[in-house]
Length: 406
Length: 120
Image (tube, rainbow over all chains, first blue to last red; front, side, top):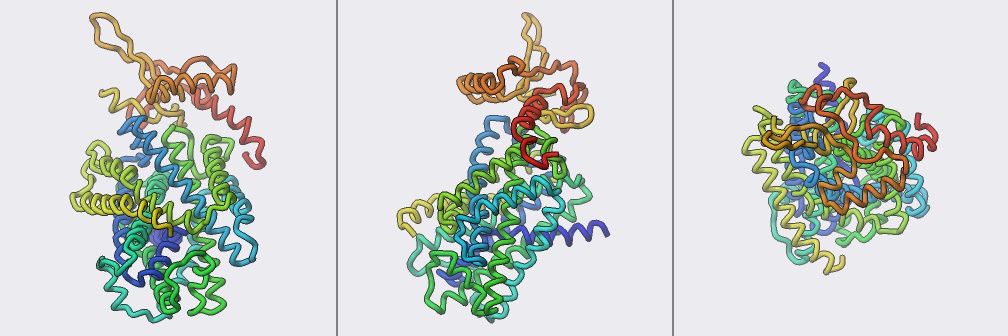
């Protein structure tokens, strides 16, 4: 019974946690520019994420280590510091993008420019981490995150040509604009396979003291949760294809256009619901990323960390998330365009995936950590293939996109 | 026991399972005609920096001395005889309050964290 509850809660958390500014805006841009042609990228990214999240949970349950602890222990400090710096840098950019996303939602609702919102938003995130307990944060953010289901409702009400949507599940070459096509594919992959998600998940599993009896729960949560999350991202893509395509809008340059995603289907309510979804999803993601950066530092250097400690009891941990939020807020305040920041940081995530994923795969195959629960050939092959593909696409398409100057 | 594999870079905990940093370095004693003997565990930012590059270690040491003049000199060392158990974590018979990490955490707490309301 308790396990069933955990599965439901875990799935709800994942639905709330999957959608953030990255998956939303990349899916919307893909839908507007290429209709259903990039559905495959969402599916492929999600498949990889399901495998990775399942592995992170299994790793914590079997080895009783968080992924970060084991990375340092197994590969030594020098290699660890290299991974640590790379992944943290990308996380800071993503954190900036999420703070930008919440600020943008507030701009849509109030008309006040988003730069003015960055500081209050960063402060609100910080205050919750400073004062709130982790359980409250996670459950609260994910319950509110269910509002993003309005995108699914919108997509269904739009009566899209389902056969064409399904056809997009198979990759096909674009007619023209191929540089932009591949760049968007990379951004979608990067947005779906967010390393912070599986690092975060393994820390949560250690906090909840998972053991091997949780392996079934873990499989259910990662499979169902991430699939539901992908359903929402796909809905955003379908909506964008149906709403923007027929109006001749293929290139979305600003979030003001994206904000009209639900309006043709749900009218004025659509506008409010979109702003609420965007704001809540990004707020939840900002909380998770700030926490994850602090977790990684604390676990990497052996400090105290934990959801319910007071800041005075884990001053290192508290200082790190405070500092991370300052950096994230600054990225928005200096006036970086949140849409560009988002798409770029997602592509960069894809480019740096091997840095976090390959060492993790080595751990998953290490008998001393995993015993009989080591990875099978299938999971190794699936993850390696998708990560290698994302990396190659990223290395090729990022320079092209920068030169093309979208 | 394989020192690099089983001890280095592991989590150190005190008898109450409080985390007190990692095993950042190991000190071996060499005596002629005898196999090297493990005598101490070393901890600290300078130890870590030395593993990356000796010059980086000198910078870290200078920085540490500047921030906090009276900081206990040299890296923190825990005698190997105080190690009780090497498992998932390395458990040592020394209270967290006596560790170098505690010293720096308290320093950070005093200088920054406690000045913000609600730190507890």
